[in-house]
Image 1 (cartoon, rainbow, N blue to C red):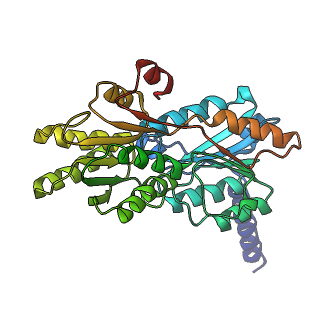
Image 2: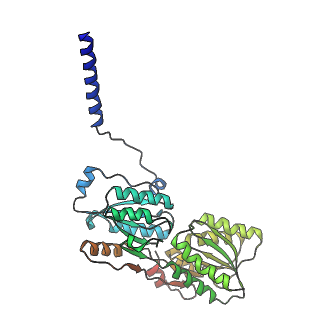
Image 3: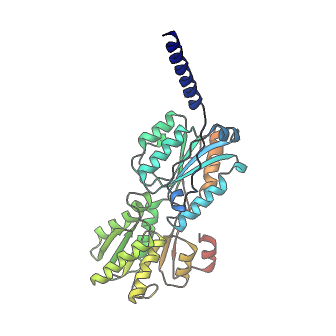
Length: 348
């Protein structure tokens, strides 16, 4: 019996040793390199002890943006941020992307858990941010908004560097009204619903249509910033036989898709033609369409915000209080007056 008990005790001891060994062993898993599409929605990686050592002395920043493949504007915005937030410039930066608000909020929670110093945010939707930003504040993470505003208590973020989307929309609608058409039959192609850009650019047009008897929206639908979806929307209006003479697209890519549908149907567009074409963002290729008078109007949305954010972080690190809101300077361009130097200077 003593031998049996001794044998059992030895077995238990060996098993517990194996368990301790297992729990203290680090396992490295190699995964396939993500595709570009996967990169656009992947969550931030958990910081390891090794990477913490490498980032000693660097300001740790988590950046949440929309999909850089969304548009030419977003590509330029992402590139501007990546050029600024480098180790050479004193930053340890991680990037996460999504067009979905709930995914962005999850990324924010992960960045907070990873103890970033700053959370930079271009929100997919204006709503839903109070709770996670309160978590950031409680954890000592400073939040800076860029590109887009949100509906949250201003005490939850340090500063915002944004475009005045409502002003962009109003400038565009004022220009359209100045064309003095006898009637306005508008195909309104919207961006991602709920985003600050969509709300600002839609709001001014909706207000004008409600106030004027000769303004009509013949079709109002989101194409989610996508050219192909915009082309399908315009094609559906053409197929229905509904009369229209204005395309108000809330970004350049959607305006491009709309024009593709017009071209396929043999409908003329641009200065002095059957359909007025309007876009936003001022991609260089879009401004060239204005220069050739194939389009009529393009509203500027300035993507170059990284230097402003860097300046704000430097002020905060020095104990200074930065300006709460910085509005990017922007304008609208008319095909009748645009010049090559405008394309070269303002095209993105």
